[in-house]
Length: 113
Image (cartoon, rainbow, N blue to C red; front, side, top):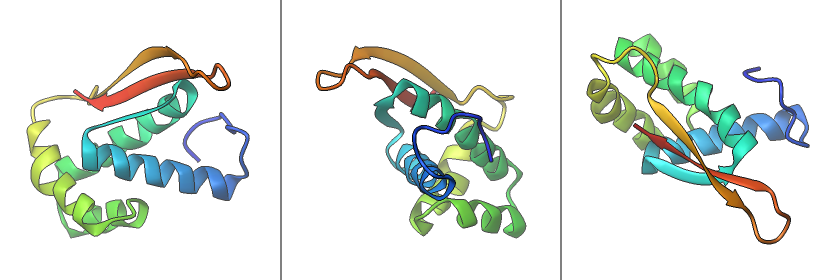
């Protein structure tokens, strides 16, 4: 898969988690999650934006196979990817925000730059 962190989940649960978080990040531009989840989501989002920059039907279908909402995939190809047309990578930023109150998990915000 993408990273080496298991995140305390089976492979199917981990893939579903990544798919949903990538979809939410592309839809909203920013999400708050644990630091290690953010570090796992980051390379996946970068690859999706790179697919969007290349355009074409095959790349649209590849992105749609991972992204869970069709309108988000359309937004990726129509709005997000053209914004980064002249940028070579580094589309996301992970910022640590401190510990979560309940279990002291390290939280972070991942956002599109």
